[in-house]
Picture 1: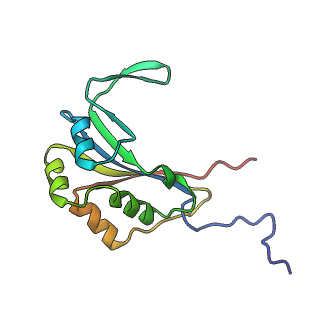
Picture 2: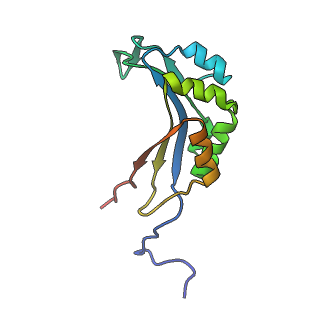
Picture 3: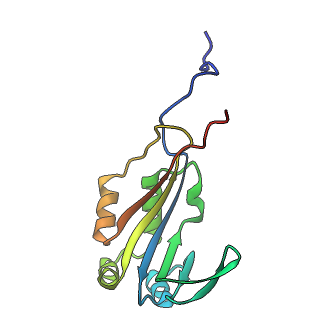
Length: 152
């Protein structure tokens, strides 16, 4: 008997194959430079409401002020969601007063793109990580992308 599953067997389960994690701060009156000073990191993307920018070959107007910061290395298949969120938060201020002040005038979340490589993959967030998000007033936004279609 072989140690390998037969070629017609599909392996299910395991952890999410790839992920992307970032903090987003948004509001009508957001000043990207002020957020950058508070967070002490350069954003992945930031724009004031009404700013013009190129996207997909056309000019678009920013509908709301936005500031995002994500880990460039967190799209690796070696990261677990909990570890990526902890690493992200560790690069941002831990002073809860900063977060509480921002939460009064801005919407904030941790945006997670979860890319499944097969059916039935999942992830776990530890209670301490959930507490860290809640203490900062951060919602958790999960975008879950199913596995690629079978090549039939």
